[in-house]
Length: 137
Image 1 (cartoon, helix red, strand yellow):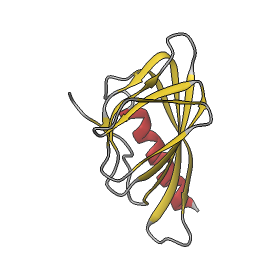
Image 2: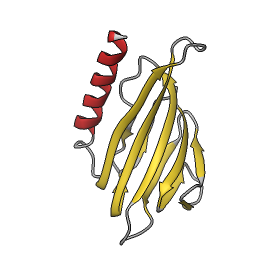
Image 3: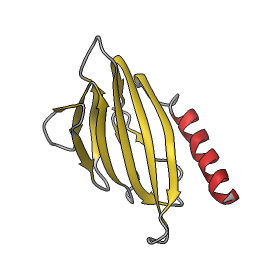
């Protein structure tokens, strides 16, 4: 239990410092869930709440090679582009997935006047401490 709490604190600190190291504008990321999977040794489920201010964007990024991600829009609409796929707008209640090794080139609020929220649920190696790596373009 204490190990889990310490790992969650370290992961939260990584998010806090990592959020300043990229060119995202009007994006706020918060780890809201972190739990080891009892039936899959070495894997954890982590949930991240991404809140976008009107016009907010995320820099291009990747996630760990061990990560499978299920993302669902909770509020507003999110424009997303994964790998060489088209830019797609997902509205509240719609979902998409990202596979290990995917490159997320576009992730932004589709509105310049309304906020948007996205819940991203990761299944990832428990030892992984950085969930997002930003790409210089």
